[in-house]
Image (cartoon, rainbow, N blue to C red; front, top):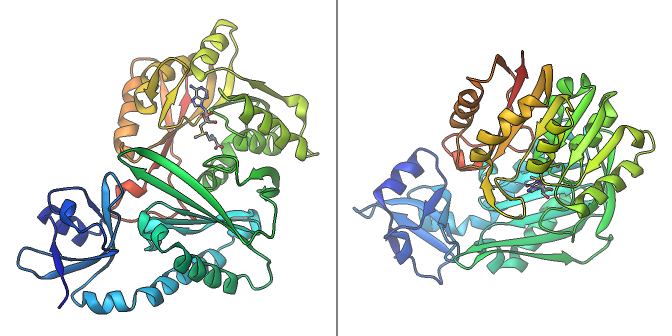
Length: 405
Ligand SMILES: C[S@@+](CC[C@H](N)C(=O)[O-])C[C@H]1O[C@@H](n2cnc3c(N)ncnc32)[C@H](O)[C@@H]1O
C-alpha cells in the first residue's frame, strides 16, 4: 500500500492547469522530511501526482514529476523517465541551429523541459549543472552518473568535463556550492557567442561570466543595436551587450557597473577580440543612479540605452527593487536619450508579469512626452523555453521604447 499525502485543493487546481510547484502550506508542511518522493492525493484519497520533495526549500516544498493514478509505477519508472526527458531536451537543442551561432546554450531548462529544479548549460566542452532543489543533491552521485552518461552519449566526439552547482534556498538564506567532477579541463577558458569571445571562469561566483538566458535576446535586439551610434550599457556585468554592440555596430560604447572586478573582466573580454576597437569603448565604475545624474549634468546623449538591472540592487546605501526603481530612473534615462533614440529596458523577476511591467512603463512615460513602444517581443526563448501556466518560470521580460520628442 502506498502512503498517500493530501495536498491543498488550491495545489490540485494549479497542478491540473499545468503548474509544477507545491508551495509551503498547512498540507505540504506535513510531508515527512525523510521522503524523497511524495504520492499526492486529494481529500478523497484519489492519487493526483508524483512529487519530488524539497523539505529544505523555504517556499517550494515539492515539484510535480508526473500527474497520474498509478503513482507507484511512476516511481518505479523514475530513472528511465529521467533519462528520456533529459535526452529529449538535448535532442531539441541539437536539432536547432543554436550550436552554429554560440558555444553557450542550455541543454536543459528545468520545469519547461519537465525536469524540475535542474538546469544544464553547455559552455563549449564544459557542462554546468545547476540544481535548485535538494532532491537532486541528496542522491548526487546517482543523478550525476545518469546525467554524465546521458550527456556524454549525445556528444560522442567531445571530451566533456562536468561542473555541479547546488543552490540552497532555505530559511537561513541562499547558498551556492560548486563541485568539479573528474576535472579534465581548467575552470578558466574562452568561448564564443555570435562570433565574440568571452572569458569564462567556472569558479568565479554564482555566474561564470555570461548570462546564457540573455543570448537569444541579443539576437532579437541585433537590428536595433546595429543602428546605434552611441550605446549606453547600464548594469553591464562582464559586457556581453557592450561587446555585441562593438562587434555589430559602429557605435561608441559606454559600460556602467558598480563592480570594478566585472569591468576589469569586461576589458579583458574586449582585449580577447582583436577585431574590436578598444578606443570606441569606455567604462564608468559607479552606481547607475550616480552615473545617470552625471551624464545629465554633462549633457551627454545616447541613441541607444540598454538597462538590465538585477531584480534588487544596492548602490552602497539603499536597496531598491528594479521595478520600483524605474519610476525615478526612466524619466532620467529619457533625458539622456536623443530624439528617435531607443531604450531597451529589462526586468528580471518572476514576481512581476509582463503585462504589469509594460503598464508601469507606459504609465511612467505618459506625462513625459511622446514615447513609442517598439513592437519587439522580449521573452525567454530558443534554448530557454517557458511553460504555459507557469509564470514563475517566465522571469525575463523587456520592452523597447523610442523617444519621439
Ligand atoms: C544581471 S547583471 C547584468 C547582466 C548583463 N546585462 C549581461 O547581459 O551580461 C547585474 C549587474 O549589475 C551590477 N549592479 C548591481 N547594482 C548596481 C548599481 N546600483 N549600479 C551599477 N551596477 C550595479 C552588478 O555588479 C552586475 O554586474
